[in-house]
Image 1: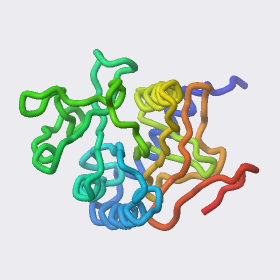
Image 2: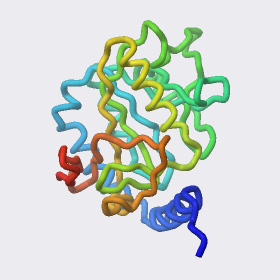
Image 3: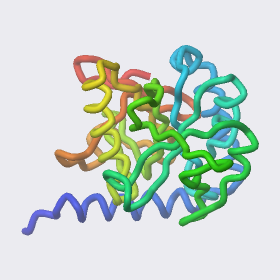
Image 4: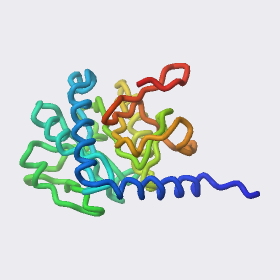
Length: 225
């Protein structure tokens, strides 16, 4: 019997989880998203961070991050959000958002995701990879699914895997610590350890925050909540 390829296994799982999440009511996703936001905002690593990246969520199918990004700005922290563009190395970088007015002026792009332009008020936005950019402390990361070994299944484009890998190398070269990689997941997006198929270029996260728990893994590989 032929072995199913890694790409096929990912595609099958992605389709299955996406179907489940799309069927969730808006109220169900909103309730879970609020609980996740409370966990994030009360976490020590959040209060200690000065510079955080957070994705701007799609209209449906994932954790709503609107409360989190607003709190980042209101707390005086630096906020960076993803920008996908073919001209960027790896196809994605993170751009700094200045304030609430800036945040609310960002237009919706592909898949209904708000995505900033490279300029704001006639000024070029700072990229996370710029030489004079503030080092990122935390990156809040979306996914189709995570498992309890902290493996991540993305949407299949590889943007986050490439960026997280290259930014970790960049931080090391600059003498900075790697940012904390934090996955945000609805309960329906969390699978048992080993259920997310992974390849050599797939980047795992350091923890996954859900409405009910924060999942981490001990040095011996056991899941810790």
